[in-house]
Image (cartoon, rainbow, N blue to C red; front, side, top):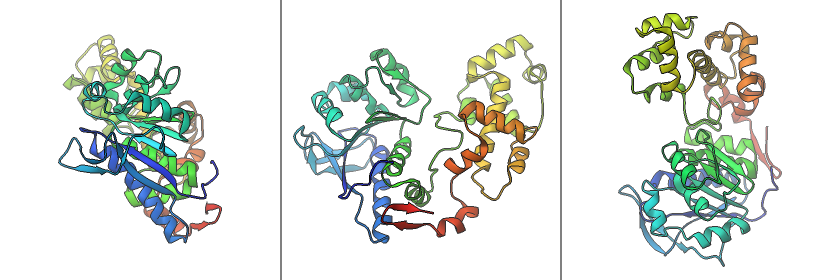
Amino acid sequence: MRAKPEMATTVDIVVYPGFKALEAIGPMSVFEYANLHLRRAGRQPGYDVRVCSTTVGVIQSDTLMSLQATKALDVLALPDNAIIVGARDIQRALADGAVPVEWVNAAAGRVQRLAALCSGAFFLAAAGVLDGKRATTHWSVADRLQTDYPAVMVEADAIFIRSGNLWTSAGVTAGIDLALALVEDDFGRDLALRVATDMVVYLKRPGGQSQFSTHLMGERTARPGIRDIVQWIHENLHARPTVAELAKKAMMSERHFTRVFQQEVGLSCLEFIETCRFERATRLLGNLSLPLKTVAARACFSDEAQMRRVFRKKLGISPTLYRERFATTGVHAEASQASISLTDNGLEK
């Protein structure tokens, strides 16, 4: 955690005509809730947030909502942190110069953190600042980002990625995840956790930092037969079916089923079942009152040892450490959260 600033950190939310409304409002809300909790603790607000665009005035979003930009983009007046939101038609935004490339170049080297949400990553890529760096964007435009900017190491499945002082995120609500990470970086996990609780979101999403849950994997398949199998697996995680048995349910040969399932879902059938159990376990671990043996049983692992092996394979950490780092608050955590207090050194348990 970097040293907490003595004065409020300036954050410019960079918008332009056609920007994605939720991508601007989500992070703004995160910073406002953080300021609220700091004020309640008798401390100064941590963030000074402004809406910024190429010109001062009303900027229409992709919805009925518009935002009032109170600051114009200026390489001589850079903020501490800048967050560029994405657009549905990012190619048009790029062609229109919605966010000037020269401004991005100047900001990348001089601000503490430059973040791009969703397709906003294209502005960073166009400026060349992502060359040789890991980055992510909304899954629907990830291939386009990689094709147009081959020097960028695109990771299409990530929720957000930090590469030095450059941050990129997946689409829409992932901007909230990124903003919570910034708060955690500035003021520690407990303040970020309080904000996440207020907003009724996860501090860290269950299942790791992945854009795709196993439910979404199944919904995206074009084959009804495979969707039916995916649904059956979710509803019968306690079962131990062989691939041959699942192929029979799908009315396919085992060889054809294996190939089609991998092609449609992106995982082998056995890998998918394991991932379903893993995701269920990550959700259950958020209930701090459940013993690990109970979590393993309810997630349909054969035993706690198998669950531990899967967590180490997927995340490199044990279920216990996952719970300590990533468990969300809830009914069972309410009493412990009520005892958290703010101090001059941040937040402590």
